[in-house]
Length: 431
Image (cartoon, rainbow, N blue to C red; front, side, top):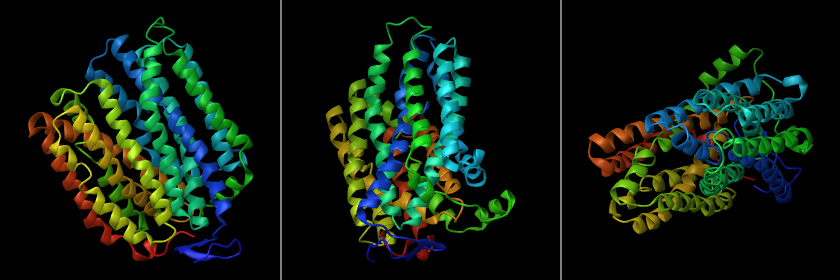
């Protein structure tokens, strides 16, 4: 397949894909990457905002680990309902402005929420309720941005490149925010309790102003190419159409298995700090190295996606995922853990990009926002579920190695699901 501005190709069933020249593809990827990047810095449940908040709860409000964990679980609740927000985006056109309306209206709501938190009394209840409201508003913004990205990826036969762009825009804040959030947490320690979180929330508000500006003044081409129209005449019929569309199920099940890692969350943090006596800085560095390892593999995937059909890439990603955490079976020191983080990131990059690519292609036409938000919701659901099982295994059923073997077994189950992915979804490569 050649990439010409006037050529078309049926890349995804039911969607007439129009390949674009490289310069236009790059411009679209960079354009949609900007709001994705900002959202992943500004989210109240991610590290730039969440890490100083956790230290405030612990040090100023003297909350127990259980209370802090409950706060984190409840504060992230809007993400568990991502599919609902995506469905609203696909069906509702606020003020006739489409996705621009979502970014401006709900972006401003986020700004107002953060500003209110900055000057409100920082009690446990106020912080929790305020964080919930900001999280709800942010899900509408995220649904619009993610829906645009999915629609553009399908429309221009660049789902693999869009997967690379989106995952890179998500992983960069993950790499940076552990360090930045730690610096921010340290910088507010000397402030009075009533003012300590004010700089944190004002930073969140300022970031969301950028999202609003992108909604109001962002490139017209992005919103036109990312526009989707409902396929059914009523929300009920669209919902039934979603349930009957078989390709969504293998893609979402793969995502659920991929993110359900009992050995990757709380169990790993306890193992690193308690069992091999890594310092807090070394634990942070471990995760930084791990996340950085994904980035070059995203670049490799973006190159492969234009030359190799999706099906073998999904198989490659699945096979590489199985031993991703195996190196941790052989480490007994903080230095060894840092070295183990390198292959972990490299082995996971292709799978993450391929499974995102598969999700973009598996979206029913007109429900792109719903599908990608279900995909993101399953990340949080699986993450928290994996943490619960991993903590139980670590404490009561065999220690950290038991969590690793459980994770390897869950990842191996991905290979049992791939054969059920319809071949027509994974045929062909990017333009």
